[in-house]
Amino acid sequence: MRGDRRQIQTAVLGSADSEEPLLLPLEAIELGAFRRRHQLDTFWCGLLLGGCGAQLTTKLYTDRVCHFSHHPGSDGQSHICGRRARGISSADHLYVKSAAAAWFRNRGEEADIAFAQPDGAPVGSLVDITSRHRRLRVHLDQAVEPVWDDDGIEPVLGMSVPVDRDTLIRRWYVHRIRLDSEGTARRVQIGTEAFARPTEWFALDTCTMTERGLSTPAVEKIIRSRTSRPAPAWTPGRAYKVPDIEVREQDLDGESQAQDLLHELAEARRAEAVIVVTRLRDQIAEVTGAKEETQTQLAAAVADAGHWLEQQAEVRRSLLADLDAAVAAGDTPRVRTLLTHVNMTALPDRTEEEIRVTGAAADHLTSVASAAAERVQALLEELRSLPRNRPEYQLCPRVQQLIQAAAEAGRLLGPRQQIQIAAWKARAGLDKPAPAQTAAPRASVAQPRRRPQLHKQVARRHWIKTSCPRCWAGSGQECVVGNGSHTRQVRRVPHDERLKPIIDERRERQRNQPKPPPPWRVYEVTCPDCGQGADARCTTTGGPHRSRVERAKEFTRLRKPRPEPGAEA
Image 1 (cartoon, one colour):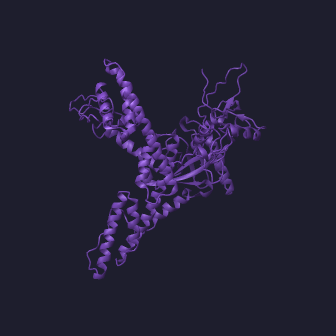
Image 2: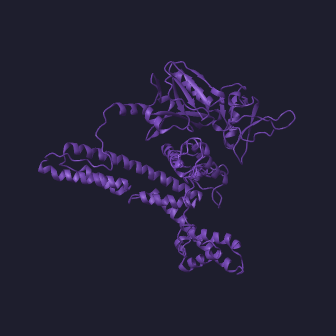
Image 3: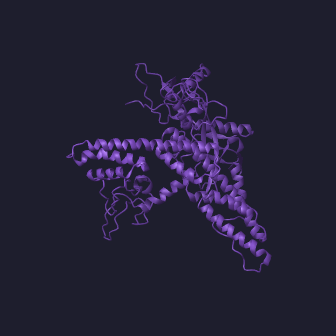
């Protein structure tokens, strides 16, 4: 039996059956302080972590993350451990128990907290919390299906546990839990997820336990909105219908103007025209002479437009941060896509930061296109030097490189180069159109757009549980060819109509997930090699040290909070 080579990031203190978890720092620069702080402690592969109960030691590395390691056996061979979960989240159930116990203790209450294992579930999948008010069952993974119809148990879902749309609508909301790393510990966050609303996250100290169950500030807002009479609101895309009653002549002009502006505002929002929405919002605020009900609609439209513009501003800030990170990483396709989105949503009075980021992105694309144009010329010269009797299959690799370089060069290529590229495509047999498709013009270098293969995006274990609306194959049955015969042939892949609802539901869940924080930039962290702080360049002439780049990537992966202006990380 071979040992498991995955790195161990968590342990327990004191003994094998301890419930006190510990997270090892990933960076060598932090491990020294960790060792001094715990020089009198012992680390163990805890039984409650699914471990073997053996003692662990710390391993320091500068070229990869630091981790715990088992002591070698008496024969000098590597220790063999069957522990399954070894990553940062492998001790989350212990952190949940510790945080819950402290939370109840600070409120002068008692609670029974246990690690449930129904039907042989692995330890750590479930945490049962029973108080005088309610029983919570925390699902940290998908090992056990949540039970929604049991009034005595309220499920709290981990980040990887899905919830269907019908459950969200029927229950109004569900609670989620996540744990964020803070030094050598993990901090509990409670989220409230509702249908068509983003998940709102709160510190555990801001939550309460009532007869109704776990409650957050978001729960109170949801209950108030469901139980109180809603105020008149304006709905984009549906103008207010004027009732068939007599209106005074002096109000006709104001009423007509109000309806026209509401209609234009709805169209502008559908087109995501930020400038037009801003102008119409200001015009609507100045409308007078309309009826009282219409004035209420106008006020709601102004408030809603203001909220929408704030969201668009946040979207622009997020796009700029992503664009800046893509430029720093040299991700040309992403730079091209994000720059297009930024230009579509930007206002005429751009900030200095927007000008800097978009200018850097444009310079990056220009340099990439110039390099690609030079590569096209070099490849054309290389192809012309080849023997004329070279077969197609030997030409294909170089011609494909030529096509890729031409796509990156774009408008920097002249008509003569385009003609030469088309000629080489024909000679290599790469200009043949696909079946049922029209041949592209000879001077075109773009590849035909392929239809997405949905069956590669959904695993069989997911779609086999649903029925097919096209061939009427039931749950647990393969899709068949609809040829009208009694013995229909089984299809090699399921119908797209069976897969698309699953993909759409997955995308809806992803849209409702909170956006990750923007990535750390290289010069926001302190360089471990030369010691240069934030906003200071490394002392080398060839760019930042590799260790500084890796440290920024690691901070991004751990989602560490961004530094305050003037602070160093």
